[in-house]
Figure 1: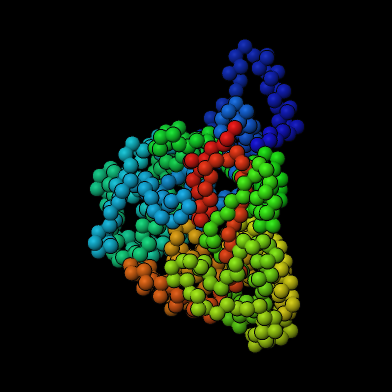
Figure 2: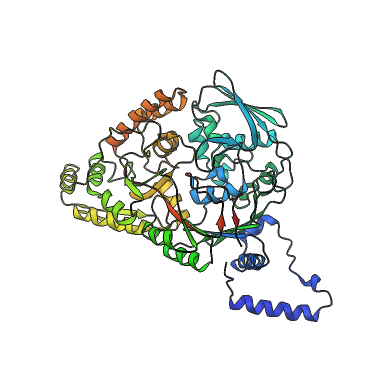
Length: 566
């Protein structure tokens, strides 16, 4: 990375040189503020830049420093309390779960558990843990640590739940049927058999229990760190992963260093990883071409062809594993009227969006679930672009003279929507054509996620990328009534849909699950809580010096095997 000098930094450097020359003991004059390591999350930009500058010097001396540029910052570095993909991208490097996924698929492989078995009745799961593993703070990883993490997520009264500090574990509730004391919560008990063997006992089958164990949301934090940092754990992650947390300069960069005692011999190959925020896609590409960064996410699809043929760059694609959508707040006027939601669906020209912005790397969507997933309903009729039909439905909803609304627009590029501002403008024009005046509302990324989860919006843009290969992660996360106020930003509640999704969770037979999910998609389409826009194959780019980087469908991949070719 290029060193970013400031006048202040230059003056300070000169001052320190003079000071050192005047002192017989240069070491006695170094900065020793006594701040704890966790305070790195609150370092000034100057301190963060010093870290980056030292990384540049290290690169010059042969150390491996990789810079990964993305469009937005992380929301939280506590994986269980966020649904943000930019957060998972970072925590994937620092914390690990019991199981992992294969580099290019959702096939399960060992993680912190080297083996596991399932009882014949599908109710008892036993995991056999790796021995000799330590967290980054030097404490032992063991079965008690696993139990502490799962109890923290499941029990709102747990000392490390931090619910008084507004921590919410929505993904745990979604994937395990609720929380301690809830009727649908499937984990009956967690038994520590010995230091390296732990047993989960369920009260009913859960068809995707093992897949859940590979999700980045359920990566494990050091209990000692939870005690030390308390509710600041979201700024001070401590795991067993290949990289340890160094610092976080908000909306700028997150710095991770190699964990020398990592459990896998010879890994990681990189000495340092810097996740840098460059909001503009074009600016990220310029930085890649100049050698300032090594990997960029959110490449504009229109730039893919040029990157593919450009010497010194490599074009990469992720598999189609997402949905970009326009969501209604179904409990807030005026979109509490289903006729108006149908009208907007007919008003949006999805194919024009796909053609204009995805350069052949997207297909139009008719379901929240991507094609190829278990239970994808091919028979659902899509809402074809039909402005006349939209105007007719608008009149039926009581808006013959049109109406004025707010359209909340994503501030960052994401894999499912590489240019949200242009998508918003197309949608705005489509709506204007049928008599709906949409005023675009813009927020920074973290406030955007928070305010839409709280229901401040009428109409908003977002998307979802799969993280465990199971349809429940899309349908329940986005549209189950229990997730209203968290990942269900549509505030959509349909008891019949909830019952179908709950039954699909409990079913072990995959054909039965497929039928239940297909039926749920029919009902969801009729209720129209969102406009499903596209399923994309996200494109990204690296320099040719980056070796062994494999984009995962979840958008969060380990960088342990990655290295830089000098």
